[in-house]
Image (cartoon, rainbow, N blue to C red; front, side, top):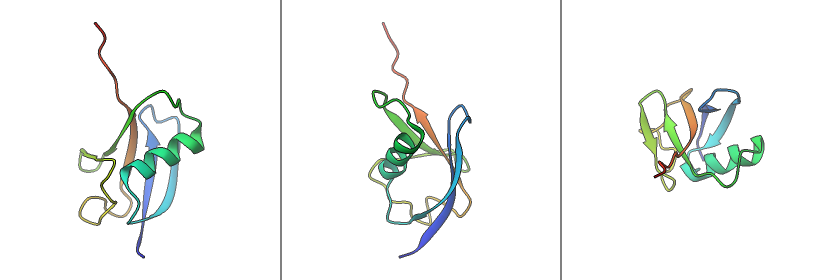
Length: 84
């Protein structure tokens, strides 16, 4: 099983961690780990963005080599819902 070292951070950049993750981990796995480890609000939906490429990583997408390069910064961003 191959691994990739990435930096995961929150959108406001108050929390940041360098971690090694299996390439089989998904976007949802990364988000859930951030919510659990950093006690982020559980009543909020989050998206995961590779800031190096500017592309979102879907919850079901694995951290494949073509999607996430070694040392990439993955940002956990709250999904903002516009009100009426």
